[in-house]
Image 1 (tube, rainbow, N blue to C red):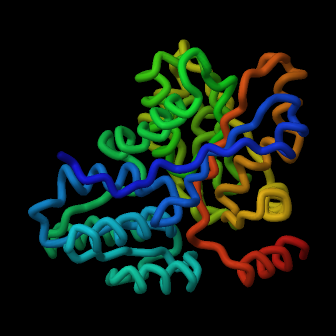
Image 2 (cartoon, rainbow, N blue to C red; image 1 turned 90 degrees about the vertical axis):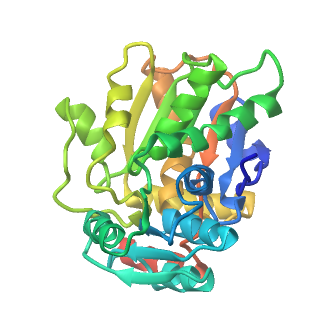
Length: 322
């Protein structure tokens, strides 16, 4: 029997968000996972399958995947090495060390850190834990939709799902979950910030694109190339994936509004999906005919908040106002 490291997270109705969009909004609170984000679902599942006899795991991460890998490794009693890019906050560094992980810093963006993680896996005989691009991760993440279906009960399904896209792991897991439930027709609104928009860029180009740099402050969305499977899903005629962008300012505003209204602090990567509600994007998609006017319950995945605190929030506000 596989040990489960993730929690069955709360599915909360948001009255204030529901008022804004004119349909019931449900929040899947993945920020309440023990590692602070949804990543623990897939990473826990992958480590159970691949790392039981391991000398240790190595994971490259802007924060959340590393936190999940460090947490799972600690629970499994194996060493964890997490490779961060220099863009990661000192808060992430500190929290990883608290989980007992060995932390290395390499390169400017996630892709550079990943090159170092792959090298360490080879030279130190460690199990490589990819942060978003692996079928076992997607399988683990799909449990999120299984839980939502159980909470909704028979005969009810989401009118649409809103989520943030970084490397595409959450998107692939949610799609797998929707397909498994027979909910293939549920539209997905895939949110990114301008400057960390590798998925949107791939859709526009009609093929995988590698961004020159990550210029967004939503560092946890900081993959320069989206995973191939996510792009393939975007080209699938029987799936509806709506790719949308918000500015860093809109994502930050969403983080602040969410803190005020729901009393929960999340990171900017998560703010990208919340901004779909707060910036009026849902209504715009309805007026454009891309979402039904009579929309069923809107499921918003609150993907995480392990790499944010009040000081960072204040710093971001100052930085983005200049």
